[in-house]
Length: 259
Image (cartoon, rainbow, N blue to C red; front, side, top):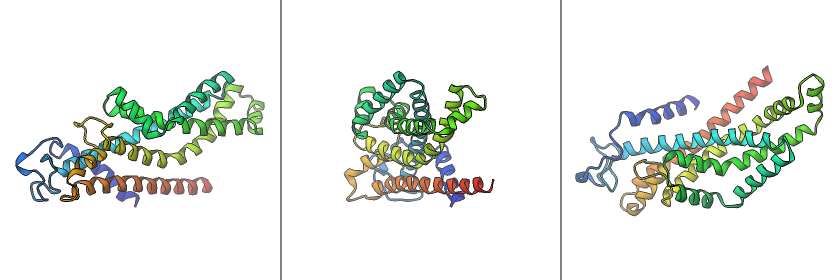
């Protein structure tokens, strides 16, 4: 399973470099069926579906992966800093509460419409959605550990208090954040697709799975493959990543137990 998923991801990431331009239109082959020239057919604008599916999958995976990494890092940083003083705690946590007050799709849509940016703007917007829950987890676990005897024990061994606190919080918070990886990645994929579907995602020149689903809904009844192919790819990546991460965590747990 792991090797299969790894091979698929490598193919998806590398395929766009060997396929035709996903935005190139062939007006003589609009909505053509799969054939030798276009293995998966073309869409309503005559663009090659295989090329767009590969590029869209790569863009969606890269965006979701970037969002996951940034959310975990900023959440860990924000949650740790909030434990240093009451002022920092109030400022950071109230900011996190304000971000969590709005539904994720509404917050992301408002930010995308206001900023009018490209893929990296979308990464920042989606990161803003997921950082609060990561920061809250780190803060909660940090307060729990600081009230236990581990913190005092670390100080007794000679570590300075700020350093002991940071090491203790990070060591215990990372395990919690690791469990959030499949949830954030899958949610980021779905949220990115939803934004693209409603027209608040990246520009039309950057294909994504959600954008392909949105563009194909007008011809779904006559050419369902235009919607079903990117939809299947979206389900595949979210499901396989979750299963792959679960398998990696299981193997890591076995290694830790043996060591």
